[in-house]
Structures are given as C-alpha cells and as structure tokens.
Length: 241
Image (cartoon, rainbow, N blue to C red):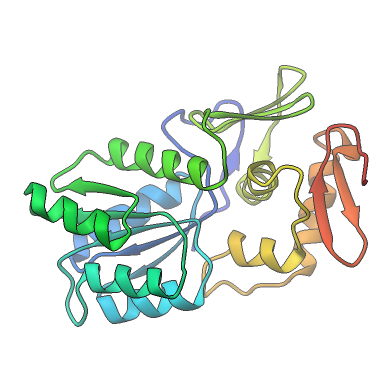
C-alpha cells in the first residue's frame, strides 16, 4: 500500500508522480526494490511474483504502466504480454531481462512492449522510462502539463498555480495528476478510484469527493468542474461545456 506522505514544493526531485503501476518480477529482492521505488515515487503499486498472477492482475485491473520481467515462472513475460495485447490491453509495458541480445529486444517489441531495460539497471533510469511511457500514453510529449495557471512538472512532481508552489498530500497529488493527464476529458469517480488505489486497498468512491473538496481549497476551485452523474473534468476557466 502506498504511503500517504506529504507532497510539497520541497519534494525530492527524483520522485515521480504517477498513479497506478504493476510490477511482475520473480526475484524477491528486486521485486521489493521496484515496489519501494515506485511507491516512494508516488505510485499505487501492485506486484506479482509469477507470470500467471501477473497476467491475471493485468487482465482484471487498470494500470497506467507495467514493469514486466521476461524470465518468469509459470508463464514467461513474453507470453503474458502477448496475451494482454491479444485482449487489447493497451497499458504501457516496460520489459526487464537479464539478457541483452538484440534478438530478445526484437522479440519483446514484436510482442507489444513499449520499452526494454536489461539488468542490471539504475533505478533512476527505470523511473525516467516509466515517466516517459506514462506521458506518451496520455498524449503528453513534454514533462510539464498545464491547465490555465495550473502547472505540473512530472520530473520534479512540483505543482504550481501562477508560479506559486502548492503543497499536496500524496492522494491529492495522484488525483490532480490523473485529472491533468486527462485534461479536458470527463473522468468518472469509478475510474479515479480504480487508478488511485492498489488492488487490496479498501476502495470507497466517497473518498474521491473528499479529495476533490481538498483540492478545490488549494487550486482555483472553478478549475475542477463537476459533471453531474458523470464525474469531473479540469477546465482552465470552469466552463463545463
């Protein structure tokens, strides 16, 4: 379960931002390191230690990014990925492998991988690749996302309004980051709940309203528009059209 540490303008610039991630890695130590790094970076993280469990989670839960080892017990990573893609699962997938042959990279990309990282690797590089894949999946090429005077820098996890830093808790940050990455689109409460919390978290859609209320006290309140019966949408001027 992700920790709800305070996010502020003084946040460690190495900590990223995003919402929901899956780690599928059979090496216990590396699995723990990946989960810890992504959790510290602000992600809600689920993990699996074999291909069958990883496939099931990716099949049934919505993830913003997956870190997937190739050499897994029960079902290898390439088979997991191929089955996800056959089911039209489109989440970005970064493959991990102890092999660094060009043929393995080709096989991984042909199976539907979005990126490829050979072991051993620096955790900072993995986090940077995760950031890039999440941005691309949501249609943002730059590291900064804006909505009117509201700005999010995904490299530093810094949120500002009119250039002034905004201090947020981790859950407030995740919620705002998700809305910003889907700027202009109506996002339902159910979608927010699914992307903000880990699989085993006690999910309650009412908490979304609480976080929305808190955010409206920290950014221009009219920016978060309630679309009755549908959800929420960010708007620079509060226009709900």
